[in-house]
Image 1 (tube, rainbow, N blue to C red):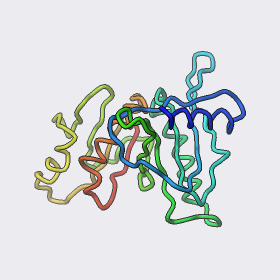
Image 2 (tube, one colour):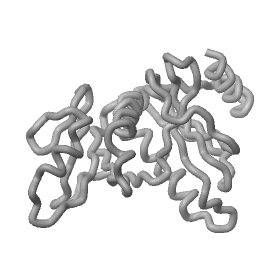
Image 3 (cartoon, helix red, strand yellow):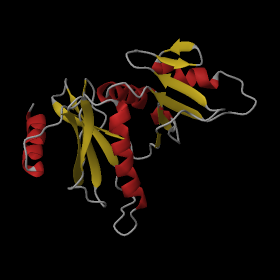
Image 4 (tube, rainbow, N blue to C red):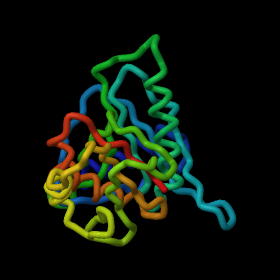
Length: 210
């Protein structure tokens, strides 16, 4: 894939050493092109028996759109803390902040043969269990469907199921992702959510990783 080759070449020259990121794949493009962007890389590394998420952010310019390239092999428990660091840096930086800039994850569209991008600017992550009283949608490693309470349902049915319940007080809808699932599986879930659920919401649910 031409665009994937360009990405890897950029990695080789920008990082000054031979490293690459294995991107997740999907058969659909959410966003095809992002202008005025800075690349950020989270590499998969092994040191002894330990797997490490190695963050390279030296080319990140606060005022630009950020494209975060995460290796698909990393588990969420390692990848997302590095994403949180970047989000906090951009959200707290006031001097050069551009309120119109966005954050995107990159992935490879295996059908269109192009790089594609998934926005996550408004997502807030928490590396813990949801607070009591929240309405939790649980995304479990290795599953095609999701859990709401003890019921397993399709992603496309999340909102239908939520709005069908007669709450005395409507709780916060939150997403809980299995911390041991791979980043690739997470992105595939996120693409389905973008298509089926979150584009209908004014406010994105907080995402818990646990």
